Length: 368
Image 1 (cartoon, rainbow, N blue to C red):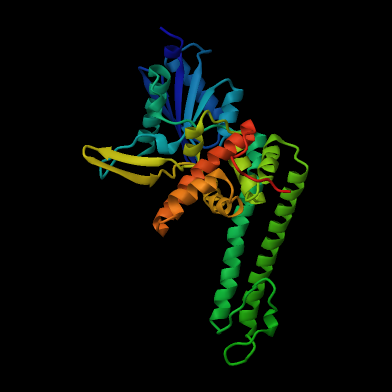
Image 2: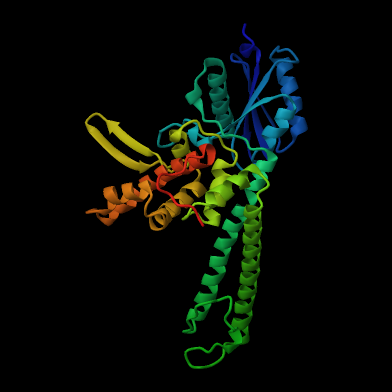
């Protein structure tokens, strides 16, 4: 019997209060339930499962769970115990196409266990896709721009709320953060009542606090780009040298994509951003369903915005000429929208080659 056949396979279905565990060795299976986030109980159940299945105490353990709310600390904890860990992409797990399908934690953990065994014992790489686990430092690098992203949404919410409250009185303003609320007058020329002023004042205070934190984050980013200390920030600074690539675009692309992930070819780069096509060909029917949108949404959004910016600020670039020749001259607005997605994919590949191989995009200009 091979070493793989003597391994213990562990699948984990995670929830907020309990973890469902599935154990198997390729021929037998066992299920247990433990309190959530209890690493000690998990390791104890692994040892019990080895004894129950007649495996050696030092038998290799191969564990898998779906990426989700608990993140990567479980993988890091298990690796310190010598366990081989797969963090599975939930979207890659095959599911039933029946209109009404059974779904329980028991069935889910059984499905994960079978996918794990099929991959390890039978070499079926298609059974699931693996999510790369970042280091703690790499994961920490994601926090700054993601906090800014959340705060920008919160800022928009506060601004909209203030404008909506004032619109109830026939008042239209341009800058909710700067307006002096006490000086406002309604449609009759009367000042606003104390109750309305209190709510508006509270919204404005929250808005100012959010704007202040956004300004602090942007100053931190600028300071880091001027004096890069980590590989990810070095790549962000390198991207920012190109005209059309702003601070936020360079920072997001570096932290989410180029800073710590490794790609083998251009197809992997495009797939990571969800910018690759999804053809449908069955019998005599052939059509394109659009981009997959299965990748990193932040990178995809940045690249669509950056593609438009690239056309504007890099007019002599070969990519810009390609876009204009193919999608602008004699094309309608729908074709231009499709073309900008194609440009975003090509541009992402070009930027990848630029940061990894120092291959400058043809015809691109750098900042003075």
